[in-house]
Image (cartoon, rainbow, N blue to C red; front, top):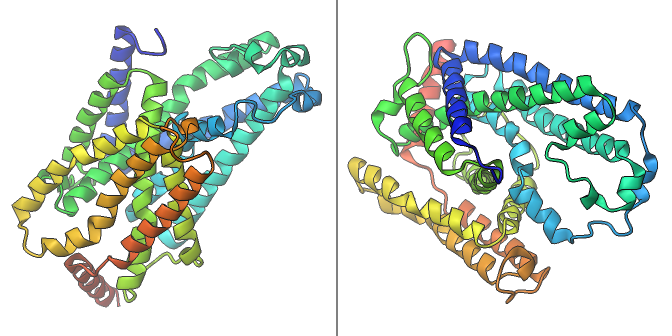
Length: 406
C-alpha cells in the first residue's frame, strides 16, 4: 500500500537479502560468477525492450508535441536527479572502485570499468526513454503526459502494444536486475566496513579475513544486520531511494578532496592509476556533488546530514580506544567537513522555495551560492590534508614488496 512492502513482501525481501549474503559468503569467485550471469541478463532485457518498443511502431511526432520543455520547471528535474533514483542508477561505478584492491591490473581494469559503466548506463537509459516516448500513442500524448498513469510503465505499455513476450521478460527482469544490484552492494559495502576497521574506526573483528575464501566474514554479518535495519525502516522504494541517493552523494564529497590532498602531501607514493586533469575535474566534481545534495530539498537534506552527525559518537568512541595523542592534527584536517555539513543544511533551509527552503535566497542565486561555498570548502579540505603515519607505513610496505619482487 502506498508503495510500501506488506508483511509478506518484507519477509520475501529479507530472504532475498540472505541470498545475496550467501552469494558473497563463499568468496569472490562465487560472487563473480553469479554477478556475471546477472549482468548479461541485465543487458539483454533492456536491449529487447528498446528493440521491441521501437519496432512496434515508432511515433517521432511525440517528441514535438509538448508546448513547453520541462513544464514543471527545472527545479523538479533537478530534484528528480537527486532523489528519484537517478543518482543511484549510475552508482554502479563505485563497485569497481571498492573492489579495486582485488584487481589484477588496476591500471587498465579500473578506468575501463568506471568509464564503461557510466557510459553504458547513460546509453541504455537514454535509449529506453527514446523508445518509450516514441512507442506511446500520439493521441494520448496530446492529452498530456499525466494521461499515462502506469504503475509499471514499460510492462503495461508492452501489454498495450500486444507485446506479451516482452511484458513477461520485464516482470522477470524486475526481480533479476535488482538482485544483481543487491549482490554487488553486499560485496562492496562489506569491503567498506573492512576498510573502516583498517582505519581503526570499527572493532578489530571486522578486519578478520577468512583464510580460504578471502572475504571478511564478520564484516559481512554486520552488513547483513544493517541491511535488515534499513529494510525494516524504509519499506518503500521511493523513500529508500531518496535516502540512499542523498547519503551516496555525501560520500562522493570526500573523494575529490582526498585525492588532491594525497597528491599534494604524498607525491612519492606509488600510484598504479594516474589520471591527468584532476586539478580541474576534482573541484568540478565537488561542486556537482554539492549541488545534487542541495537539489534533494529541505528537509531531506537536513535529515540526512543529521544522520551523519548522529554517527559521530561512534567515531569518538573508537578514536578514544586508540588514544587522542596527535588526534588534534587529524581533527584540524577534518574541520572543513565538520563545517561543511551544517553549512549545507543552513543553505538548504534558507534557499529558494523551489527546493523546499524559506525563500531567503532567490532561485538561481541559491545554486550560485552553493557552488561558491563548495569551492571554498574544497580548497580548505585539500590544503589542510597532511601526511599521516599510515602513509609512511604503506610506503615502507610497498618498498619491501618491490624489493622482494625484484
